[in-house]
Length: 236
Image 1: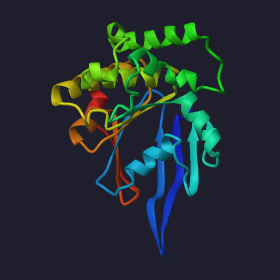
Image 2 (image 1 turned 90 degrees about the vertical axis):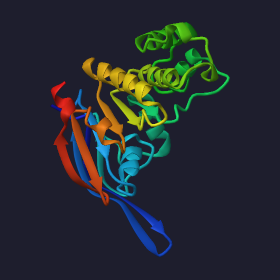
Image 3 (image 1 turned 180 degrees about the vertical axis):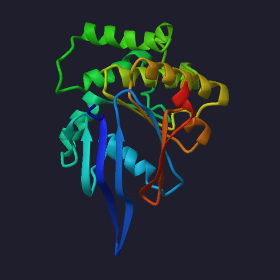
């Protein structure tokens, strides 16, 4: 089985004047299609740096990152932006929705910015966005702006936006971090449902109880993989 994600001796070094900071120091991971994996680690462990590279928001200093069979390690900013738009759906802690813009139009944005795939007509974009909202139970809120929605509803809009281009990978960065416990449980339930439908999900979190709901937890310490083990979610 070809992995969705494979990193080989991945390194990221930041020059801080006369000091070099090794944010990642030889990371080797493999994530197969349909897996639900958490990435954990203390502050300064490198998990945010790894997420940025896996999400094609940044490039490694050394090593390889192969996404769905393509080595993207050396791609430029424009090429990485195209990969992000076509193949990765992002879910952020702070939702990152446009204010004064309806839920429907927020979900349509990735299709508007997709310059490298097949161009969709406005009617097709609206139909796909509505279908994505329906899949997260928010079709009846399509015309509402973010300030008219609860935190949980905003995160559902963000999930719909992540799904609308049918990505090969969903990157979820602390998706329950701004939500109360009950709403966070609902969002995790939705992610479990997406996983059951075959989606590959990588979730970055500092909460062990959230990580325990995934199939595997990769723990980083000092820029290296300290452990990679099955978690309680594997038996769900």
